[in-house]
Length: 286
Image (cartoon, rainbow, N blue to C red; front, side, top):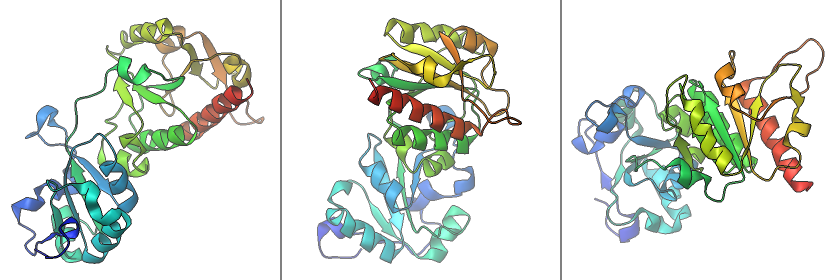
């Protein structure tokens, strides 16, 4: 252990088989953990920015590991590491040791692990929210990560997951979202493929105007669909198939982003970002 200021103390580990590094072992397969509740892995944050956001979040941090220089700069930038608390161990390892533990070269040089807290309820994430996003069938981790990053940047208050979506705490989602999945509230709607849409009634009772995003040229222009509504829920479907007819029938209006001739749609995350911007713009113009 490096002695000195208690806030910057860390434990040096030289053996990649050391059990204290178990949280960070074989990261390419760490999201599937049959030894943990639900079979899902721990939350893993990569890089100083995302690790910092993890420390500020509601997720109980278990450990931090990194190269000596990366730890020095991170702890110095975070008030000497006081946010870590005395109960969170800090492990210093070499690049070679971390590569052997993780299963590949971790050039970012700084990682943290956290437990999954109790999931938030739909009622909790809707409280005080004016703009929410509802996802259906979005199974691509990068799209979900981008969705959180775009939503955070455009003032969306929460994300709700319908049927068929990937795990929002998958390691790649956390990384692509730049840690915003750890900050932006999210919850899961109940029900299967043909029943989860009934959960949308809860949003309607809370005063949300439900808007389906679709490339259908017969749909309403998104500017008109969003105008004049205090609380809005934007429904977004998977890349390619989009929203199911079941989901769109459960909404108040179908909205489209106008496209140039010869094109019919944009990438999922791009389309959502445009919708988020338009929603933010419509609120500012009121």
